[in-house]
Amino acid sequence: MEEINQNIQSIVPQSVSQPQNTTSHSSETRTIVTVLLLIFIYPVGLVVMWVWAYWPKWLKWFISAPVIIGIVAIILGFVLIATLPHSPVNR
Image 1 (cartoon, one colour):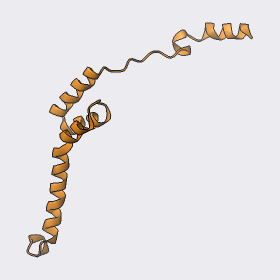
Image 2: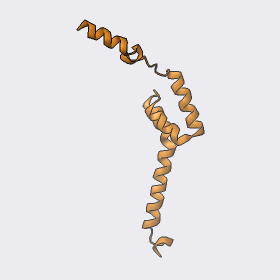
Image 3: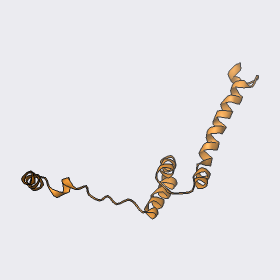
Image 4: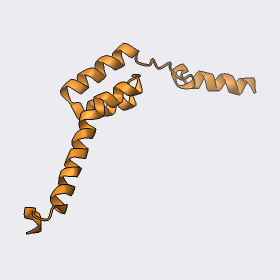
């Protein structure tokens, strides 16, 4: 049995038999990348912020508030236009 183990170890490279250590990104790196994405590509930055950044929930909600308010305003606008009796849509 020992001969088989020695043969396997000699055939299989060390990098395959032992998993390599993966380094996780530091908190500073996550923050910098997230802030840059929020500045230059806001929708992508929001997703990255919620999934990847280690920020407090209140801050995430605060940064997401403009999108939430915009979506609610658009929905309310459509509802008001559709339900008003004198709207151009109902003519």
